[in-house]
Length: 67
Image (cartoon, rainbow, N blue to C red):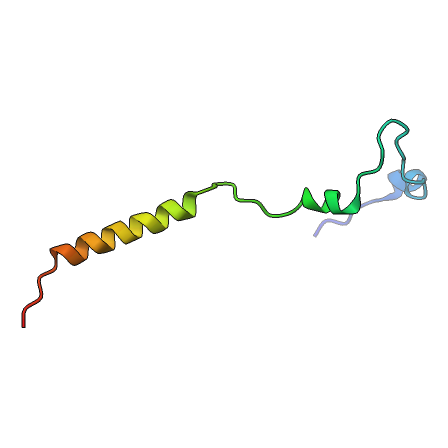
């Protein structure tokens, strides 16, 4: 594993975090919401489930049961 050299950033490490004069600080709850999981393919799982149901019912209709 490559070792990281922080010496070129030493002058910045102890600096205070910048605070914007133009934008109010975002609420912690709103900031957390930005990182919440989301469904990239909205509705995809429902389509897959419906296709499975359709194919199973088709297979059941084709199947003949003998006594």
